[in-house]
Image (cartoon, rainbow, N blue to C red; front, side):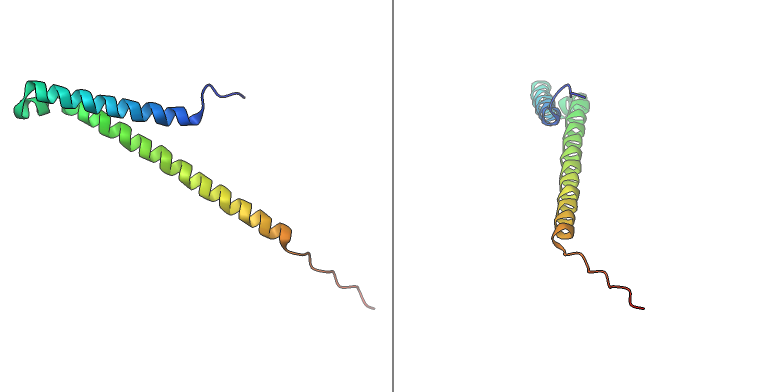
Length: 92
């Protein structure tokens, strides 16, 4: 089945959304000023933080999958290089 988009594009979208929400939140905080601006835009900072956490989760999951695939590949290569044991002949 053909994928709608490359898996890397989802990570790019998450990064762009995280940066965009952080910039908007920081700008709005500076416009309103003082702690009131921070209180009003806290939810934007939390959305940005959540997107960064999601991005880190996806990267870690990909890293673990790559390590497992590499270990499986090495195990298959080791099994292919290992010579088969000779079967002893039955003696009567």
